[in-house]
Length: 131
Length: 151
View (spheres, rainbow over the protein chains, first blue to last red):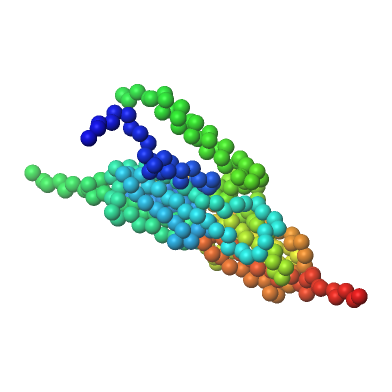
């Protein structure tokens, strides 16, 4: 078998580049992040998004929130102040998050994510024995 | 001590600038975007609204995520619609525990003048996925009437 030192683009590789260049416009939704006793809480405003159109995933310590918003009112628009588009935002998670126990809830257009601390990162009280 | 990587810093700055421009830039059809997802602090009016019309009803769609449905107040007087309510902030979270705070919160009130008279008794409102949709049927006198043309 001939050994190739210069990679030649295959049909697959050439066509694989196309779908990444979509015309879609994404915006970064505003987020609040705070800490509670269990871990981190992330709140993200995602108005107009149904639970099925929302994609939340964690991959190699990166939290990705992605979705599509749709208008709720019927009829023709006669006056517009905003557009609803897709949205996309990523956060780097600190190492001590227990990725298996992340919870997500969508209510009134706000996504609430609870990222609990991993057990080894929980503060531990050390009992002091009298000598 | 860690040495800061200047290229990384420049890259981060470039990304931030791109992000800011993309938010105030032009949409694909060349019309200015008022982007949906950052309507908070900088917006002079809150909530932002879109007005739809299907001939029978007006629909006012307001972008107001995170409002308790009970805290909305929707009133109609003549052809004027008033939306008010409150978006709660982070209740009971001490400031030192907050890492990021971008979602605006507070009380709001907005008055919208509709292009025609509506029937105030038949107005209804629904709050769904962070969008408030107010349905306002046109008043009988404001409905278009078809006139037959005699030959």
